[in-house]
Image 1 (cartoon, rainbow, N blue to C red):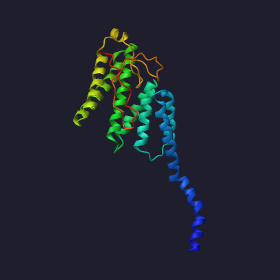
Image 2 (image 1 turned 45 degrees about the vertical axis):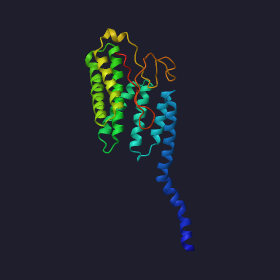
Image 3 (image 1 turned 30 degrees about the horizontal axis):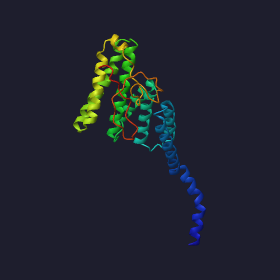
Length: 238
């Protein structure tokens, strides 16, 4: 018995090293990732650019075994980039993420739908800005068509599962992008640019510091993390 206790005592340093290099690493990294993610959620309403940095920090600590949690953080970072008017970066991230989700078996369908919704939102804003710049149809129409098809499919899926609120929300966004594509360029020039800020209400919010010129966007249901969906689509085209 005494020999066994002595051997266990001698092995404790080796066990500690093994834990430090193995499960303990994932545990500590996970704690740091969770703390950074909470900070990102706290910042995103008032300072989305700082929230993007906090999401970067969270992702840098995510364990390799994080699975859907890491994918969700990447999606939230991309949506926050839209809030921070980092539209080009958001579009690239969402394109890559949607492709990765399609190739990953067993992913939460709600996460997939949320990513497609965010990408459609990004395409909506890209369409608006390209049209405002006077670019030819072949430059902006693929983005408008992508958003149209995505929101149509999301609305149909919501109807099939009996989610009337989600179906109405996606349907309203579908109508908005259709109107945007049909607007005469002169009409478009006379409209306020829709805010890319998800929190913007009535053209003013803390994040925009009262400088947004977008109209009040329709509301979206919160996502699984309670942080809200993608950037809302302005329906100024009506």
